[in-house]
Length: 75
Image (tube, rainbow, N blue to C red; front, top):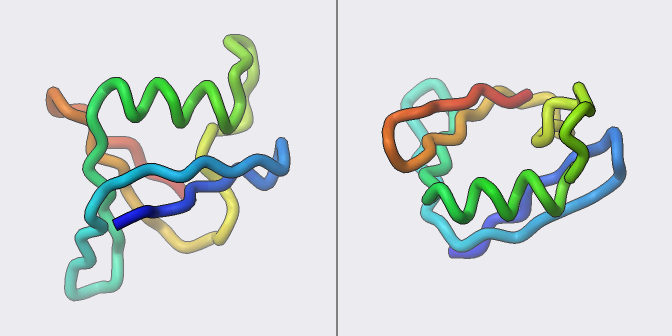
């Protein structure tokens, strides 16, 4: 399944192939590999010193689970 992530601060989008898991509260978790996460960072922001939060936009809470154990909360 292809999922589109967005950054409304930079007005950018990025598509990744991953299955979205939705829990009973409607919270979404998107499991990504480390290389997918690096590409998302590069395409949505790409600046080392930016504080935009990389994935932001729809206001609904969701999580990105990165291979290796790191989980990032996004709004």
